[in-house]
Length: 415
Image (cartoon, rainbow, N blue to C red; front, side, top):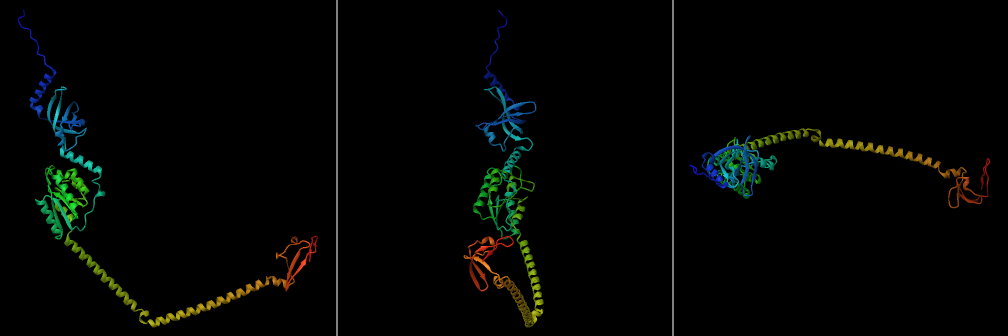
């Protein structure tokens, strides 16, 4: 009999071990709340809304999960290859025995979550052409009605009204109140822009607010606000924050002003300056008219001093004499031309008379034709027994060819 009773080891199941390890992890203060740096890879969003991915560095990797409720509030879209800072806890999935990191917060390393969200949104809208200068419209030079889309309280709206009134007391200012900060601000801005367009009575919209942090200005970086500005039929001047603050609203608007006061300066024409410009223009027109009248008066005076205007009868008599002289010259030229043509015609008639057949007949020449009137000019056309007609001075005679006789060995025709 052994002095020590036999000792049997306690045997655990896999589930018990995994549950034990999970408990250890849940009791560890470090593992239950820690920040970790890594690069995203194998990013996949499940149909359930949960996101599964791997966090890795140069030497190691760890599976991670971002539940749907936490993924929904992320202001940016995680991508493969993005370096991020994540906050959460390490837990064990008992079913598979794998531990993984449960992400509760995530932000891009370097520029932060809001900065990454704005950068991604800018890239998307720029690809769609919302920043294209070809779509930007010029401001009306003489705006009569200005719509201020901003918070109805605070220094911004007072500054814009004051500057507008100073530049043109007659300008009509319509304040369209909206929320410019916090939850629901983007929807409020969109609704205000649509309201002004539906009304249609404004010449230009000034959209703005005072300076603030990136979080404060986020409503003006929202995609819905950018699309509302782009769809506006009324030109929009964006004046968000200070001069160094540049939002997506500034990029998509028809014009960006560095401050709300500067926006009022750009949108409202200065009435007194315009009056001075018009008066100066009127003075130039008046001076030009006076100079033109003086030039025309001098020209008229010069014309009145000419002999034609001082002694019109003498001028008319002189012109009549020149007219008569020209008429006489024309008549003489016509007579000379007629005589010349008459002589040329007489000469042509004489030449024609000399060439006339009648003249030849008087010299003893005859013309022989057939009984049908065809002229016979060659011996070959005559045959013995042919009847011909002889044409001569004083008349004609009919004859018959009895015999053809040739001279010098050729036959010759005898009538």
